Image 1 (cartoon, helix red, strand yellow):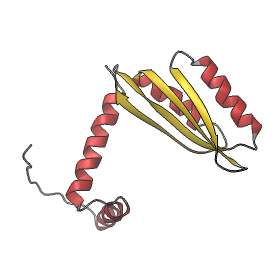
Image 2 (spheres, rainbow, N blue to C red):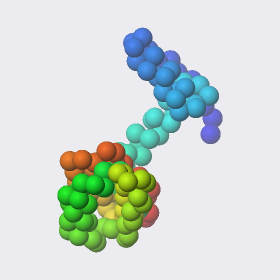
Image 3 (cartoon, rainbow, N blue to C red):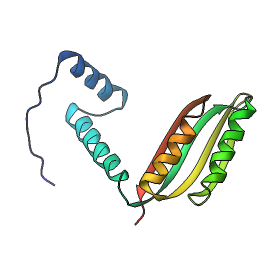
Image 4 (tube, rainbow, N blue to C red):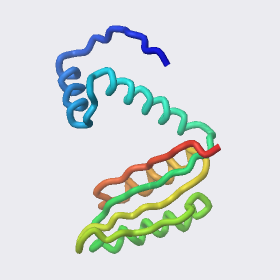
Length: 133
């Protein structure tokens, strides 16, 4: 695929943020980072439509708070048609890494992930998807 050149004007603060992003993520230059961000945005927009996708919901939480595990289990039980499997890895005495493998309509997986990630006490959460149809 041939590359096309164009100019971009950014405020100095935004350009500094872009340069920090380039460095932090190991991109060779600004163009590579911008291509990545545009492609990521396009992929995420496609997730909001009616495509069948497969992926994983990854969450990290404090396992000493039993209410979090109960809430995760309740949500997964309610959405069991979307969940292929799930597993927990106990990182240390406090932290648990929970991974749910999922498949279904993109918008439904996004809704499920939002419910899981928004549980009070979740330290970090992310949905990773790829088109499966």
